[in-house]
Length: 267
Ligand code: OOG
Ligand code: MG
Image 1 (spheres, rainbow, N blue to C red):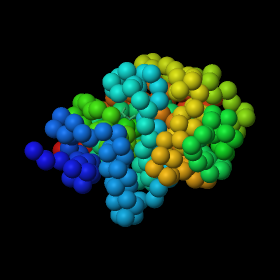
Image 2: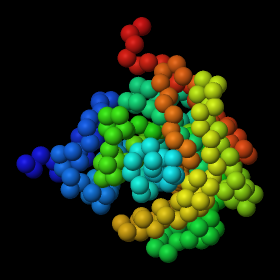
Image 3: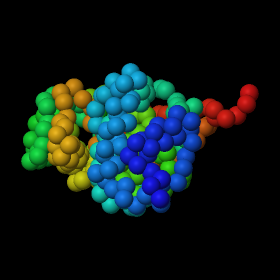
Image 4: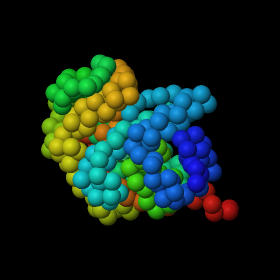
């Protein structure tokens, strides 16, 4: 019966990522894969990413908005890691050759000025540690077929990490109303999703505080210079080859991401 353990799940997730292969969630066969177990797997795979030369750039939050929780049917936020391997420049297409079934979601991004260590971090103390705010888009990709997973599965899978782009314009946290900041997501010119910063835990600073407090359970902190992706404001949209996705914020600028080429089409 002991088909899966932390080590084999960690290895299988990295293999799926490398081979662009999706699979059924491990919890179908291993219901004991809970969130704490998921974090041990997530951290083990971060170690492997760093050992192969990736650089840790910061933290991403998952499922901080109602829209995301409803879609994914997982009803609690969580944290995961971002590395330099996931960075896209403005203008880069979706890296289809690395991804299985990419989807794009708009996010508010913080760059940290000070170390932020929980527990006890509040929205106010979190925002006081922020250097700058930017708009961005995350290209999520799940190693689970049809994005079907339970909380332990998705935490283990580094919260469906894929790639992300940050818009070059930055503002001081004192110069933006993060609750009111609106965003629109267009697919092939058609408006598909709308939201505001308030959709992220009432204020993206709450998500930042949540990340610091959650990391503290593992003795970890958010470090100066790190980036924090505060979680999809709206539901994500599919970004297949040939599509064009535009993420347009109110004051944080906009970014257009081309779906790019189909890596499976022979030409
Ligand atoms: C989980 C990843 C969630 C976000 O911003 O909510 C995430 C998923 O939706 O597959 O990155
Ligand atoms: Mg996200």
